Image (cartoon, rainbow, N blue to C red; front, side, top):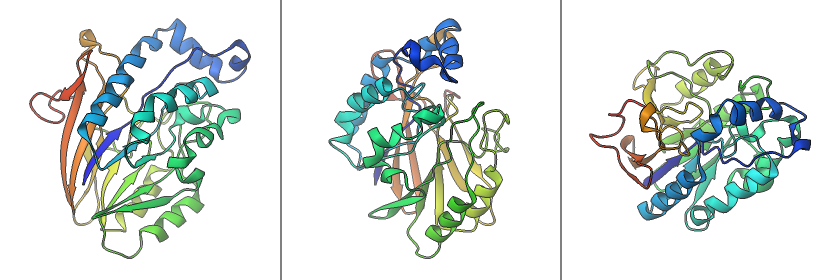
Amino acid sequence: MRVAHITDLHVEVAPQIAQLLSKRLLGAVNLYLLGRSAHFTRATVEALVDAVVRAEPDVVVCTGDLTSTATPQEFELAAALLAPITERFPFIVIPGNHDVYTGESSGRFQAYFGEWSNNGAHPWARAFPGVEFVAVDVSRPDTLSRGFTPKAQLSALDSLLHGGDTPVVVLVHYPLRNRRGEPYGPFTRNLENAADLERVLARHPRVVAVLHGHEHHGYRTTIPRDGAPIVSLNPGASGYAFLPERRRTAHFNLYDIQGASFGVERFAYDGAAFSPEVGGAYTSGG
């Protein structure tokens, strides 16, 4: 099973004045006055889509933050840019915190991407030969950037993972662990009850990996449990501009999943196209 993992595209369209009467005003300041707008580009996303199509994966998964501030214009553009993928390959996507940026935008993700996100009913599973993907939605409108997994979803996830022996790959936007293997922080932008989600996953040996985004600088680590730890993988932001002076650029991952075996190939953007990371996955350290 060949799986492409993209995340954190942050497709951006300048908001209209009427759309700034919310948390989006702070986002606009961050983007346009503090310079974060230059960190993500449409050209990167176009190159990403081209690279994923050429890789011919069996399935493409996206772990959220397709947009910057969840306006209709951003969702419309994100859907159009991703159309070469969604029209060719099985596609699974979950929302990130930027996709539910404000209360009024919370249903917008499903309006544009519900077809590939079980119309918002989480958790949910989609099975392929030899592997099952389970999607968990932990994103919510929040004054800061914190996520939370409701108790009802944790209970449903526990039931969903019970029984069977097919390896499971869990999709969640927020990291559970940082690059050092410690609980992910800071508290202003983490998953508040990450420990509760970890406890559910640890009860089920068939969970072999967690794929996430949110942190723009990619890394791999493990989530501890009795027996084999759970592999945790984040390619890094797939929509990042090419910024060699900061040693930052966009990435996406290709996984070769054979049972519990998880081969990883990471692709990096050089300002024109994506190619396999020199030296192997994560050798660049970011």
